[in-house]
Image (cartoon, rainbow, N blue to C red):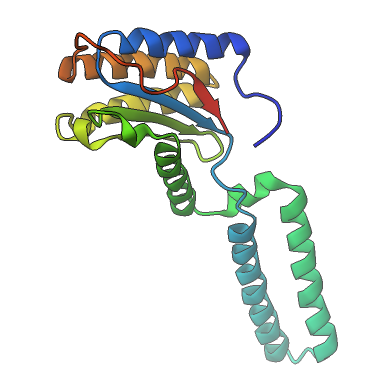
Length: 213
């Protein structure tokens, strides 16, 4: 996704330094991704809006019949069409409305899917000892996740990852995204160093910088 950067160049350097510092003490690899949004939600929001229009049309038809109010079928059909077109235009020109009407469950599923796609696309799963982790934040959904490769997950409890996720979400809610990544990376480095200390050959297998989507 193109456009203005979410994080300043100075903060990008801080995050890069934090990753390098964290990886000095571990054979694990840390990768960081920040997304504005994990979906544009136009079709999901459009489906919800369309269902709402159809339900409203049925209610109007029922009330018109109940109160003996005559609505000509062509007029009724055109009114439904006009409502549909208006709703699509609003959703097209005001993206914030889309995500506001999409249920949290759908948003979180889309954000989780994006995190998994980034984990695979960035080859975090291809480190030699399967010790890569992804720190992922999607701002529009207020969503954060840590995805760890198989070599790590069998040694680290979910509660420990949840602590890092909490760090990312709390800082993001205060518009301190860069600081959240720096703190979370330090926490991840400490956790990885405990389970996977650096060896004699501490290879750097993944890029040490934040990716913005």
